[in-house]
Length: 164
Image 1 (tube, helix red, strand yellow):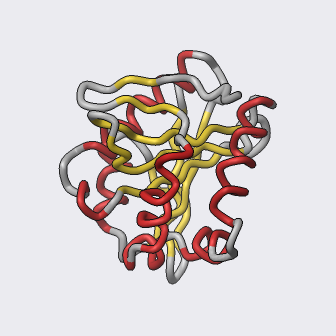
Image 2 (cartoon, rainbow, N blue to C red):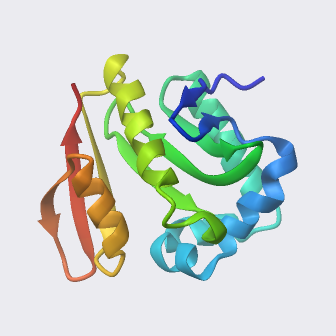
């Protein structure tokens, strides 16, 4: 049984990823842009049972209060996901959108709602993420949501946000 809380935005519902949507989740991870900007995840999920293990692992994280994997749904269609992990010691955020739903504002709303949920419940006091420099859209969204760059290297920008 999932313990992933529902979080609402103006245009979507964030909830657990259903078994019926595993093929759509796989489409997200197999997308060229997702592979480019989340290569570490793609490598983990490439094994036959990798995707199911990924989802199951997040169910364990949520039971222990260490992380959540929210599917972003609009009219019962999976549009993408937002994940937070390591809430008690190194809170991190990552996410991806299905290519058919990019540039529609869904992700910005979803990340904002997740940050609000985490902050209001004091699950952590700050959160960070790293983004490839070539992913300027993601960097822009995060900065609009109040993330600040605290470090850069040749490939990535590292951002963080203090939560209220």
